[in-house]
Image: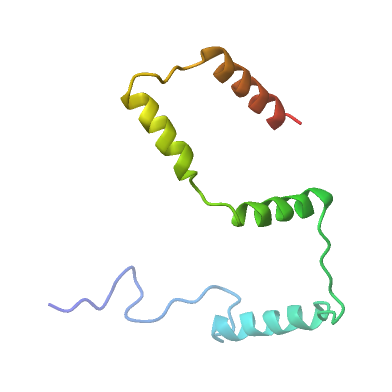
Length: 107
């Protein structure tokens, strides 16, 4: 079975009215070339400046890079106190530290 007539086209390529028959890619290339010609040329003297907060963040990151991620001595001491039952949780101190942390985020 052969399908030759779909929607009355009889195997012909449909064109929009007003199309010149040229491929759309050539029109897009012309538009792209025109846009590039109008774009400002990159400057050889571009520079970057950091805000005070960004500079402060870089200093903090540099100082933290020198420290170990985990204080193994402190972990061992806490582990020992938990094992022997002497570890006590100070709920008031935890609450104070949480409030202090939350208020520092709002600054």
